[in-house]
Length: 148
Image (cartoon, rainbow, N blue to C red; front, side, top):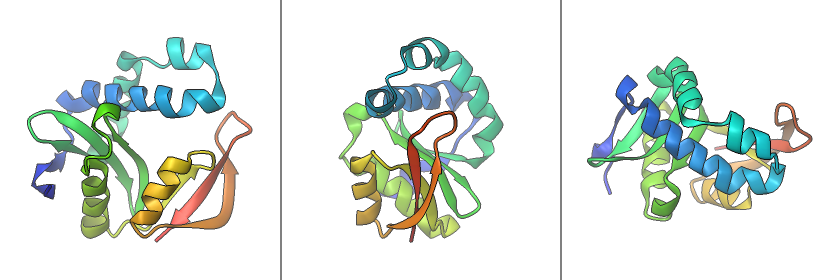
């Protein structure tokens, strides 16, 4: 794969980005938080697409004809990185992260402490766990800072 498939997100990508994000939230975070109302009522594509419009200028998509993943970058921090669940482990996330490192010198991100799969992914790409933690907003679950 080559980051030739990575481009800035535009407003027409907002719904697809929301789909990718929601599918990942349900798959990866619902088992931890078990909040039916949030994950199956409050969290929906239309609302998420609208809120993503506030961040679209900081998003980049992996698009090889179809948007398969995205990364959101603020300064040198990765705020979000999601790949369509059925397309994970194909190198798309690696390409997005490599792009962020090369183009923006990204060197930090927060990850859910219980998300062992994500932690392992980021470690393979040169990020290391730090001692710095904070609560995920509105929960008792920890986020942990990873730095490169």
